Length: 88
Image (cartoon, rainbow, N blue to C red):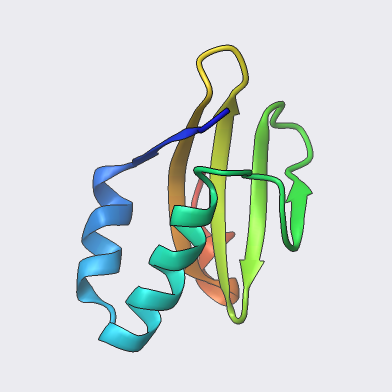
């Protein structure tokens, strides 16, 4: 079963401002979410049911999963130092 991947406006804006090499790396991972959003260095976020983080080098991808609708909602993308500073 394929998953639909939806990016928040903030994530789309963040990706558009990255240098091409990093943007391509992160987009590849986001494309992989279509097949399986739980592959790689994925951990659940404590206190947030259905919300996970995936580590991609120095970047973190924060996303939620709607199991019934097969939708992955990408909430935030950023470096480790910045991603946890603001509310998810």
